[in-house]
Each structure stands twice: as structure tokens, then as C-alpha cells.
Amino acid sequence: MIYLVRHGRTALNAAGLLQGRVDEPLDEVGVRQLTQVGERLAVEAPGATVISSPLLRARQSSDLLADALGVSDVEVDDRWIELDYGVFDAMPVSEVPADIWQAWRTDPDFRPDGGESFAELDDRVHRACDDLLERHVGADVIVVSHVSPIKSAVAWSLGADPAIAHRSRLGQAAICRIDISRNGPVLVSFNEGG
Image (cartoon, rainbow, N blue to C red; front, side, top):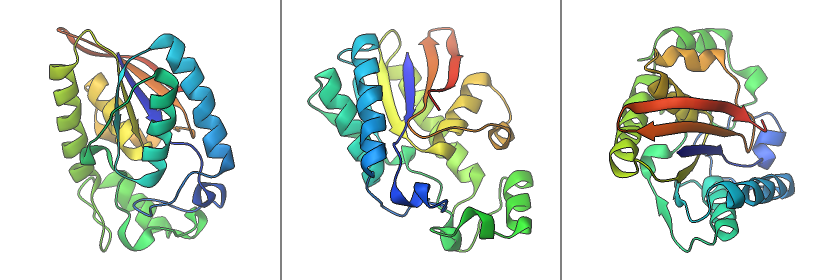
């Protein structure tokens, strides 16, 4: 089983800002959120492999999970890093121009200045998912990541157009589950606890 876990809350999340590649730590609420997720996953997936995005909020979240699971090592995989919003990083969500939101929703190749396109994100995340499918069939793995990569992984599991990501909401510290077997991935749950 792949457990996709979104990192806990940060001060930027609480303020309603696009976080992207801004490397913020968890706030007190985020630590509590991931402590609770860790207690739950320690029962469901003890000893699971833990993989993390390289960003601080994800690494702190994955360390909390690893401690709860009794796992000593966390693998950092850059492919699970959040979408790079470029010039829109740290901007209030409400101030992002409507035409930019429209471009993100309708053009997977749209790349904001200094940023990354959803097509690029999907390419790297789907490769990471293929690797998980190859390396972890029959085992539990927990991936701690961010909104956009997790939604991309869900689209991968469904064999769906990645544009479905814009029609779903994923809360902080939420869990999504993808069963992996030799027959391929199957989405089991989305946005648990979110």
C-alpha cells in the first residue's frame, strides 16, 4: 500500500498563501496534525518505508511519522517536491490573477515566470510512482509530499487525465491510499482526515 500524506500546516498555509517551494517549517498545529497521523499509521503500517519531499515542512512531517513507526531512515526523493509557482510563491491565493488560475486549469504546459508547469510535475511524479510500483509491491510505503504531487499521483493511480487534480481538494495532513500489486495501482481512499 502507498500512503500519500500531505505535510502538516505551516504559517503560510494558515495565512492563505501559495507556498510552493518556499521552505517553511510546520507550525504548532502542523506538528499536532502529523503526530496524530503518526499514531494512526503506526497501527496500520508499522515499519513502513518512509519517503519525503526535500522541503522542510515535508521532512519534519516525515520525521514525526518515522518516529511513530519506529523507522530510523527517511528517504528524500526530489521528485515529490511541490510545484514551483515561480513569481506566485508566497502570494495570497486570493491575489493570484484569474487568468493565471485559468491557465493552470486549462494548459498543462503553462509555466509561470520562474516556475514549473503541471506537465513537468506530472512527468516527475508519475516516474516516482512507477518506481514505487516496481520496488514496493506487497509492502507498505509512506510518501510525505504536497498538494500538487499527491493529486498527480492519484491521477496516475486512476489512469486519468491529470487535469482531474483541479477538481479535488486535499487538506493538510490528509492521507490518500493507493493499493499496489502486480496488476497495477488502485485508489483506495482520498483526503482521509482532510
